[in-house]
Length: 436
Image (spheres, rainbow, N blue to C red):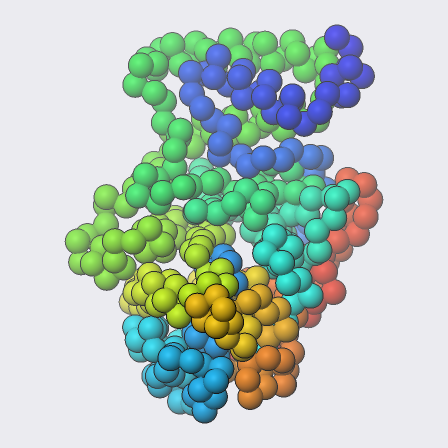
């Protein structure tokens, strides 16, 4: 094989080769930590601004399209829009939420609600993609996710553990795109099980493990000298990072068993609750960006029954996370985001047992901590929640606001390997009114 032959192999072949090599020589499964894409990284960008209040992002993504009308933009005077759903007052004057969010209502004095979100994408895959990347899907390029941008522009704070962790999150939402695997999230399925494949298997003695590493290093040196390739070099760097992680004292950040019973009861026992609790632990160990997803918001059929179940799981965990961060003195430096791809239609589809359909024209997202105002409502939808009436916020504006909270250069241009210009929020600009 010559270098040109190797370079002509597709990405799957390279990925499989390196994964198998890790298993053969190291005796461990390291590959799941690094996402599903490797590409040439763009040049390093400037670091974060010292003027920001937020150091961390906890990004709670409501997958499926959370109904704004039944959660954070209820219309109490419109029974034909609200159906059986009632609105309840919150601790913030003039802000109401759906009846299934009583615990969230009690902490809304710490939250900014944006009720004027607008997206150009009305399908799930496309809507989630633009929310996570700021760019529409293209067949010719894979854009970096928001967490990848945060690492690229702001770097990691703790070099021992991943700077970007995605819990119950699709790889499509957490990849490094053209930044490469180095900027992809470390994926976690069940938060209670922590970071999988991060320890040396018990059947591989330390002496054997070290011997295999030495052999792998020797083979790598010969291979690179004969067939220099940037993609393979990137994988080698990732393996070294994984080995460093195995020996890190900060692996305990992923261990929920260290939480007290009182804290466990505060968050609840649901999967999303465990994800929120793990997110709090991770930012305490200087993980910059943690995403936790809660699915099930695609309520075309039987909306009101589904909303009750989704809100019940969200309500306790979200209120616990905000309260816990506040009590520990971490809320000021942690921006907690609640996002979704679009809202649900004001029209109730009786043929689908009172379902609601996709609605990108107006929906709601939340921000808390990280220097934003508490008890503040930004923007407004019309009387039925159909269109934005005032202070429209695009997906790109929302992402620029997140970057602003972190002090990242949201208007900085970064060139892709194909020499195309990109910014963290495309053409978006921060919504400065949300900041205290």
